[in-house]
Image (cartoon, helix red, strand yellow):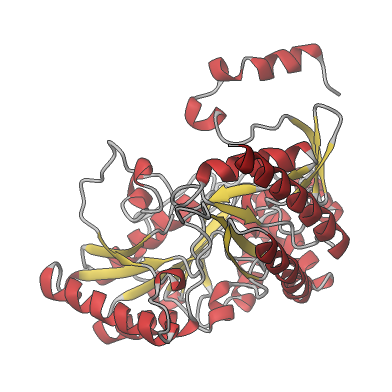
Length: 439
């Protein structure tokens, strides 16, 4: 129930919350969420095509997940794991170990994606006794100082916060930037080999590198999808030099790409994986994952947590995994993802300022560029998002200049909901086109 006091708090948001928390887009006041919808303080219902930014994969407040939370609260609210131990954390590790590829079967549970990345980098450095990390330009890995040292999706995230320890970056695979007429996979794979060779010849020797870290699909950096062969070549180069490969699957995990993890979609298994977001249907939970053999090199005291692996969150995660299986959401994601891409390709043909539509599963990016200058149109994206929101659909943005509309609905989304959402997007794009003509 909305009270006048609550509304006044919203009006006072700038004084109550730090700008870095309160000023994101669109700052929509909501009072409830369920399934694929937010319910606004204005009495309207909003179709959520953000999944709480790739978190609510099984939908908001799925009844089975909510019941699992309630059952857990009746017995145990807090760990800390290690000091005590409880069934949900052990069962979750066992369940996840059966779903992850290769020998990724040993877990350090934490609270957020950034914490999982911190753990992955620490594990790699500790296990190899090597000091340096290689990441890729455009990737986003978090904003704590360790994660920030490998985050390059936007320079503003590192402004005045450049880490004191050295990391190295090479370009991510971007099919959009390939010369016309070339074999894209071959071009990008050969370029990757040259980039690594140049790095190893001029900046750091491979025997000093602990790990290479990347997102198997670029997330905040613009929803760029690399060729499978490119990721396989990264794996090959790491193996050649004894370098550990880390996949940041914080956004791509738990069915988002149509498989449990993008590693399975692209048939490349990393040595270490960071998972979070969709793991626990909205509760804070993440994990750094590796093989038992690699984790054995990380002894007691080398890493720790107070809240990681919270019993309520672990129970929610177990219920969420069960929902994905029972409702066949991996198959559903592939089907609805293809359906959405077909409709979006039609919109691309209709509007000249849509320069690209790209997606895997229900991880879809719609890039907006000025049709006359071909420059990224981040301001235009914000206008389009606002127009769509007025009509009841919440999208989000990504890309270095905010030029990409991010479409990441809950995996339970129906074709009817996709139709509604994309019809609204069509109307918003049409209104935006008219505004551009007036200018």
